Image 1 (cartoon, rainbow, N blue to C red):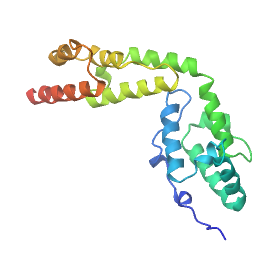
Image 2 (image 1 turned 135 degrees about the vertical axis):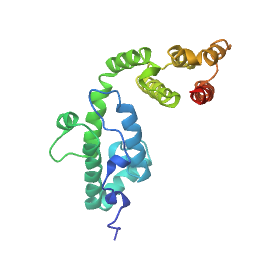
Image 3 (image 1 turned 90 degrees about the horizontal axis):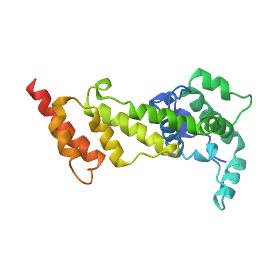
Length: 211
């Protein structure tokens, strides 16, 4: 007889594991999806949202569904709860269906955002080009914001080059960083984004020490 316990069933606060609430008004789908798929992989439940299509994985998936259908349905319902608990009320109403499956809900969410890939790319590009340091206050916060936008642009087939990322990072920094900015921008080729972050953090510490 198969086990009637699965560690995924003990999760009571999924927001601790997926600390991003997916909202139709924010370009967070790809960050949310990355966190959510990681959670399903941790518990070996990824097949519930994206069933395998190639053998022998497909055959193993079908066997798993039939060996203990009650447990499969229970785990599927748990994943549905995870989805419902990490999206906005507007998105919930858009995808909610009676007697749904995790796969069905996942596909509808994916379609909502993939169908808008071009418009998402446009919005992300606008956010990227208009980013300013003053809204973030620290180098780490600003770098994290820019990297997040760059990662999301990759996901919508609009990647940003390292050079453009570096120029965006250095382009809106206050005058106090001018020495480090000149050092970075005068290098050929431009250094990596992470190297720039490191140098700017050192400059930030020096600036704060003078205050």
